[in-house]
Length: 100
Image (cartoon, rainbow, N blue to C red):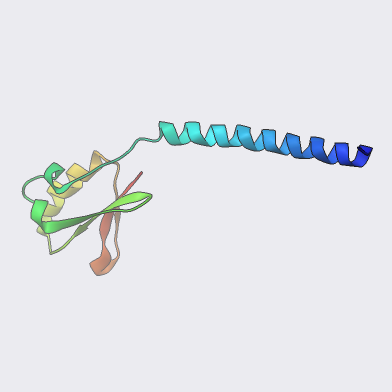
């Protein structure tokens, strides 16, 4: 085998090794990620039937299906705080988002 071929093989083997290390780190990060689950049964009774829950790949979306009013919105916002949810103001598409 020529020197050039040996060098290329060594370079490829080194790259494979580096990729394996990066992949292992990624798997460790994924395993440490807290899985967030939320169902309507978890919500306060006052707002349970006034929102929809959409479980997306990277977040959970809790979206009012009707006008909540001050009291119900306060109840929902206080509950969503436990999940570090962010309120996204966007007119009729306003919602809480919980990052996974």
